[in-house]
Image 1 (cartoon, rainbow, N blue to C red):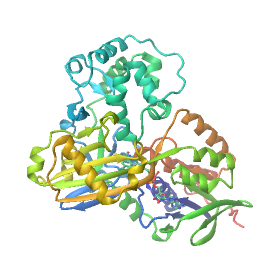
Image 2: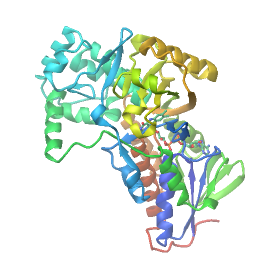
Image 3: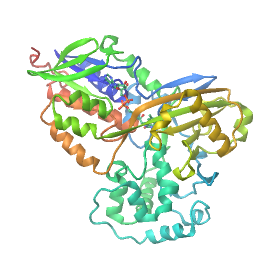
Image 4: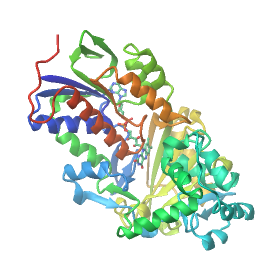
Length: 476
Ligand SMILES: Cc1cc2nc3c(=O)[nH]c(=O)nc-3n(C[C@H](O)[C@H](O)[C@H](O)COP(=O)(O)OP(=O)(O)OC[C@H]3O[C@@H](n4cnc5c(N)ncnc54)[C@H](O)[C@@H]3O)c2cc1C
């Protein structure tokens, strides 16, 4: 019987546990323990129900285009619980000089693909509109050394596009700044498009044409009826309770002879394989005794903190709010809120018809000190800024705040080269794997894929392919 440890009970660690559990049920002779420092599983996936509304503390949905979260939900029998974003009402605003300005039709992410709506939009100056037209004639780029997302967008469309759109979009999605995030790791598709077409506009149109020939457009986001935690709860219900060690923080991972020794608050345990599924800086501390260079690379992956604040309102407020999914706030507006979602429009089933649900996103990327404020201060900052930006001064029926300390990985320039060095260090240890949002995607689907792959690596390296009895254990 082989023994595997998984460290971290977020969705990455849970996906790894689920893969191991499937192998175990199919006959692989293995046993595993999932260590989680906190009192609950799911990491930043956390949903609550208040006053008939489903509140999300962390992610509210996942990108439909990436298959791994959907696939997991299917395997869990949750297919009929999946709900698409209400794309018919998709409309997003940017706060500009204190007013909401609609992102014009034809802007795909930050790439213009339609002339007329953009020409008529007050979001951009005449100069930027001219740059958009000139962009169409850019030649394919032969070599593309990594650079920040801001640098790439500026080369194509100028500074205003970075400030007005790229930066707020990335802040809303990654809790980071366009001037810090590396384009190769964060937006690899744009890099490929630039290499092939030169113009991102031309490339996007070609991609859209190809997608429309493959059938009707899929919704941009997918979520679960009862909230994202429904996925967590269902995975957990399929795992043996004795394998889940809550409130057990791992302090160190060591190699002793040919086994792994895991030191935690509840003593030392020996395993044949280990999956570290914590944020990268925690992984760095855990593995630094095994490999100094690996620890150093992991420690250099930067993380930011974030806060979400949910406010519930009555029917009157609902009727007075703008249509659409919500708004994004560029840093030039000097606000603490980076984005606000009108949840009742984006996912109508999340709020009864007589309720409005507004979720504000605050990130430490612009000001890490914001996390030092008390709950009352943060609630009052969020309320004040909603009042000043969209005139929402009504008292909420309820409010709920969630703080997430150092949980959002920020892939800097040359992140992919760092991953190659990490992989080289890891290649010395066939029974050690990393999973989580610090490496190849921070979204929920990519985290699930990372957990699946980490478990697959250990099953293969320990000779635990399903149905195949393991060789005698190496445990001493
Ligand atoms: C506010 C917010 C909104 C987001 N929105 C979206 C979205 O809409 N769509 C999307 O796809 N993604 C979104 N993301 C990103 C995505 O949710 C995360 O990247 C992903 O869930 C991370 O999962 P994880 O398991 O890798 O890490 P985590 O969820 O951080 O889990 C790591 C776990 O490890 C545990 N741990 C840490 N140290 C130890 C230790 N020493 N011993 C034992 N356990 C330990 C922690 O307690 C935690 O439970 C969002 C993230 C946040 C914070």
